[in-house]
Length: 571
Image (cartoon, rainbow, N blue to C red; front, side):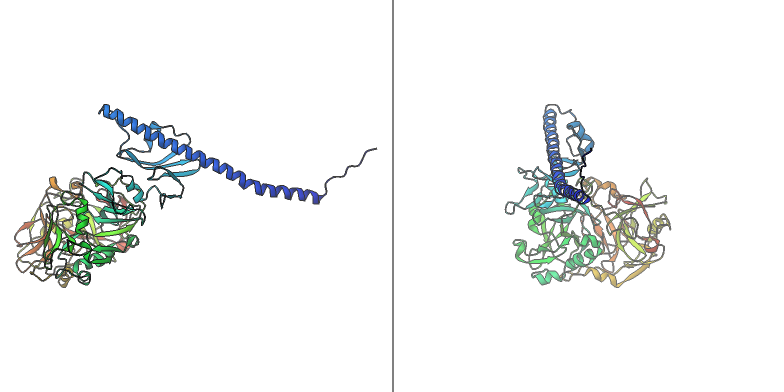
């Protein structure tokens, strides 16, 4: 007889399943955490071995180079990710980016075991979005990139402030400070300093943006400075020319506008300001990276009658505020993510903010426009390089980034008209720009008087009181790029631009503007940044200003990055 066995009831089976599920719920995260911890540990070990391998390779390579100068080094600023497998076994890791400067890595990003590891300035790695010495670890952060240039023994280049351990600044010649160029918001900047705790950078434009008289009289109080023409130009005209995304990164900053012997005697808080004398001295003065062999204003007074400025020879000088010299903007921005460049003049650090057409281009950006004229006005490539001056609803105003191939006299009188002699080369040039690109209707050019009267300053806005309707013209005093931004010195002495980006760079050391100096003379810009004047029968350079289609007729860009070395190309 068979013995009858009793099985599990449904309730018992369900209870067992529930218990097993609970155990699984408890155990699985623990197991997964153990696996993930093992992955992270393996990843950290792997990236540290890679870092050690690269450093050992480069140290050995440097010794070989010292023994034999013909030895080819790969541990240079040209190092790229393809060089790394030559130095060290990568295992399962993947190099995402690498930069080398001097004798150290300034950037290294490695993916290993499903995580991203970013090298910090301290030499350790931050994983994914962990914090790195007080800032989010991100390979493209400008401050982190610049910190890679610092070495404790530095006396020139990037140095640490002796009184503020969070502050780093640049000092020295262009040979010693050649990697602090930033292309940002349509302008080329030099980094003056940065604060690793506040995560801010102070910048100055590499080029003078205009030439104007700064004030009606020297400022001796904060209120007098804040009503000056130059403060208004910087915080009204220049500020409003910037893209809103750029404005969002610019912080209020304290500018020293006191007497040159005590620059912080008077201070003002603005978005945009001027360099002070102590900053210029700290950078190294004449022949430093801030000396552009061009006159430009400082924010300090010398006395109750003179304002301080940098002389075109680089030394400090002073003159009355009714003279018109160059303006260089200074701003403070929050840290930004850079996406390219190595910080040199030819390859500025850049951000990913490219325009797609003439409607969303930024003021200051460069555009290459096809040219069909036969006067070789724009070189053998038949592409004219222009820079965006301003924008309106249906067009953008652009100025030739250079000069026409021949000088021209102005005309028979000081008040310009379209029948003036200078309009002959202007009209010939305009005919070489296709109507596909050029706005062919007329626009307003401001041709008012901009005189010099001792003791009486002239507001740059005063030139707006007279107008000429035309389709092409010349720069107007006070507008963007109406100064020596193209460096009118001879090609052998150009200091702040790449001569290869300038159209006809040695035609003249002067160019005409649209504005009178008085009833007998015309304002022109000269090689040292001074807004000068000459008789209309004098022959000077011609810098054409035209309008390109925008708005509903916007022209698409076929390529380029909007920089001087890589202008946008019209499709």
